[in-house]
Amino acid sequence: MNTDPVADMLTRIRNSVRAKQTKCVIPASRLIEDMLKILKEAGYIKSYVREEDKVQDQLVVVNKYLGKNLEPVLHYLKKISKPGRRIYRRYRDVKPLLNGIGISILSTPKGVMTDADARKNHVGGEVLCEVW
Image (cartoon, rainbow, N blue to C red; front, side):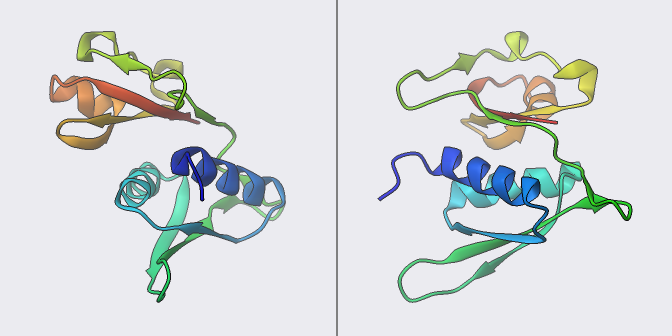
């Protein structure tokens, strides 16, 4: 049993990118799938596919690399809000990460969204992770 599925997802992706693997497998949940959708739209991963299973569905993530040297697009994945210490931000306090180079992913009452979308929709929430 995993107590923090978001940290598990970030660790699995981080480890597969460092090992220069093309794919990684993550246990599926709606929150994880929403976060992967944001990472795909932002261009940090190539794609992801949900595979049905009798016990628990799996999400297969295809990592994105640049050039022949397999330079990863993802350089930094950090979990911000943790089970022992939740971090919440009002929309006024949500700032661009690295002047807009990176993204923060927030869980808001209107769903999971990036920091830019949260500012645009005037909604705050729990800061799940930072990516660049």
